[in-house]
Image (cartoon, rainbow, N blue to C red):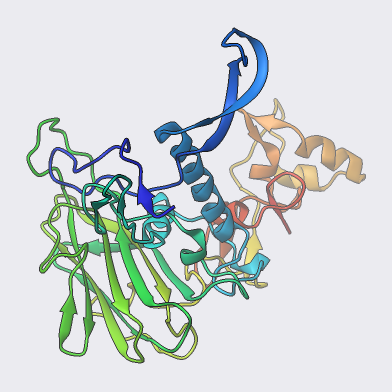
Length: 372
């Protein structure tokens, strides 16, 4: 299980980035087959054992789907499914969890086995392991902390101090992933456009990512692992040499990390920048401060019927008939949200959060809109 197949694809990429990204079981996998026992081809519904990237990739795709569902079902951060904790993770966050989970491989299968180590051209970030990637109460050895869609401008630095404690996990793993701007050149020697640097400081010691002794200038996926120890660590992400106005990133910490007692450190960024929170800070509030207003510009039909006109109908059935109509392909409920009792133009008076965000994270069982 902990050996790479000798036929597995090897890195690095042309510009020196770490490849493969992650390893997954890909040999002795039962797959569909239309080849009969006598070698005939036909309408056979059989299976056979196969080996290859086509066997490993579906496993990773399924793991990515489970990670996305983990956040969207509200398992983070408690390890239990809670509706109020649901949010939609970015692609960078899903990838960060996958790479952060990788277990070291022992080498390449053979006689004798070919030695291999994390971040090399044979195993990349190691063997995917969801039990080492997300926290599920009663099953995981460590705890999970995530930050998603954190924005940095050129020259800015984000930092967070975390307290490590005792737990069954052997290490605490920190992974940074960001979706870099595409490179217009198809023949670049160094293809990274925006550069973010991940470091972890423990006392006077500074750890750099991907097994390096200094900043990684090639990869937009960077991981640092700290042996289990009852100390505090400071995680830093610095933005250098950005070609765009800003760059968003996702960061994942899994291991012996205190998720409830350590307080956030003072960041070098302005006070509006993200700080450590147990639940994602960008979730909307469903408190009574959410209000809804009809659009005063709404007019429909030859007589220019308004939301006020619809609201004056004597029977609810008549109101529902109007609310089920459309104007230029847009449902009337989007214009007359208060009248139709559909919160489609809501504003949170404390955070100015649009109703679109509420609908995305808190859909009702009926039509995907959040009802008043």
